Image (cartoon, rainbow, N blue to C red; front, side):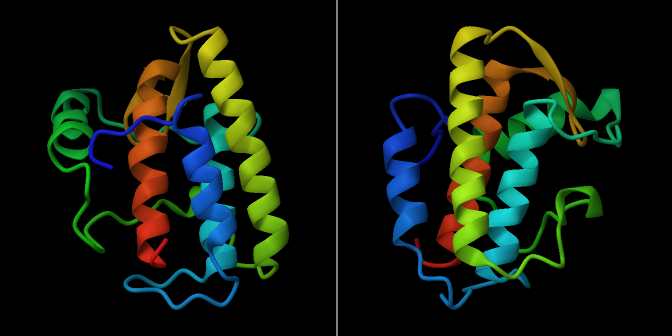
Length: 152
């Protein structure tokens, strides 16, 4: 799924992969449980929708380098190289099925908004303000990474 975006065409496959993941699936790397992974994805979608406040941790000079490395060259990120900021995590998440439902709903809202307003700029805490068109790539690569983390 290299260079995949999260959009209307890829949404059904992402939904299928998320729905097929067992709540007790064993992780292949990292420390997240399935519930915490779905919560992490949901939080990321909500940040891109501006439904959740986020702290800007970006460095403007780093944006072009990070974009090329993370979303053009390394669309299959090395395991454990990138650590999420705590603002992207919910360590208390335990209900995998409930978090999955919330993540899928947020993912659908994102696809709708990005389709209607792809040029809208929204804060990505690591990268700064980026368009929803770029967020499509961020979400596609990021979601694929975490689903593969659990064999999905």
